[in-house]
Amino acid sequence: MRAETAEEQRPLRYGYTTGACATAASLAAARLLLTGIAPEVVEITLPRGQKVSFRLEYCHRRDRTAEAATRKDAGDDPDVTHGALILAQVVLEATPAVRFIAGEGVGTVTRPGLPVPPGEPAINPVPRRMMTEHLQRLAVEQTYTGGFAVTIGVENGAELARHTLNPRLGIVGGLSILGTTGIVRPFSCSAYIASIHRAIAVARANGLRHLAACTGAVSEQAMCRRYRLPEMALIEMGDFAGAVLKYLKKAPVDRLSLAGGFGKFSKLAAGHLDLHSRSSNIDLNWLAEQAGLLGADAHLQDAIRSANTSLNALDLARRAGLSLGDRICRLARDRALAAVAGRVAIEVWALDRQGNPVGHAGFA
Image (tube, rainbow, N blue to C red; front, side, top):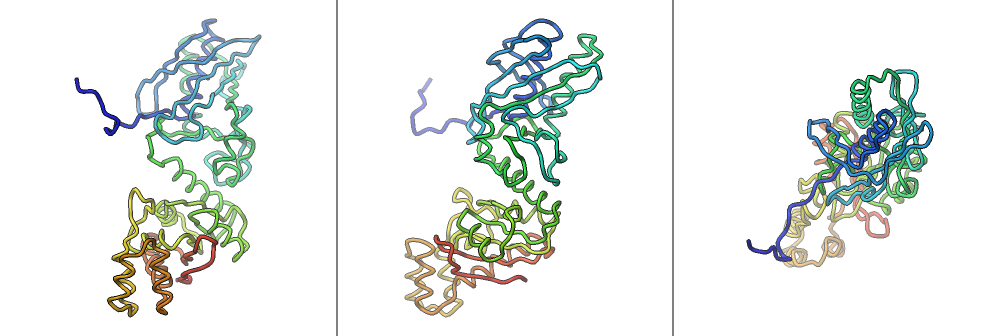
């Protein structure tokens, strides 16, 4: 068999969600309490029927409490929780129900608009259902008629949460236990898109009607200076303009400010909703055509086609007295309005690296 060379790409490896890990750990701890056996490996069934096994870091009992832990493997996805230890403590209770508690490193919800209500541990509905179903099946298997108190924790979760959107969403004290399928698909960006949707839902639930979707920290700061918006109104969209616009089509607000770099919005103006370089490129030829529609001569258009960057192209147009930044913002706004079916008033701000406006299209 021919050996794989360094240049050949191997298939990207799938991983498992924190919800799947929490299910495995809670099942192992409960099994120890009901059978006296501490498993080294535990098998669970994911929401779509796949059976997967998790190796445990430990499973032990102290008095009426059992605790088990497994280490999260996110596969080849750049997940902040990859390698984190997911822990479950289980206590048997008389009431035949499953009760969830936020352990160290798992956050608590403090604002409406998230999948679980304020005051509850930040353990999403599907992980709750997974744990409940597995524990109930175990109870039937062992003819146990009581219930379970399940405390889920994440080692170093409070520190890891600082690198997520949880603080902005009103989840305090740690991470969320997430997952809808139990599987992390590598580089799918599904978790980031889900966080965008949650951020919009929280803002709407708290009565905010003007949101600013920004590509990064510089554009966020610019919108804060201009509108004095509360942090909850700032949606960190990164490259996922489409995720914001498609969600707002179903759940609109009154006004949306889109803010980010000129190059990224030139992609949106050209019709791309994913602004990442893997999905779309800055088209200098197209920018030259747009400059031509503003009156750029052939020499200037050639210079724009040969520009080093989009900002370099913009500067060439500016020196010639052409408002290319405003034109690109208008086209980007028109694309965005089409994506929300006109249900939201939208403006677009194109900014330089210092956060200064280089183009604007007002609310339509």
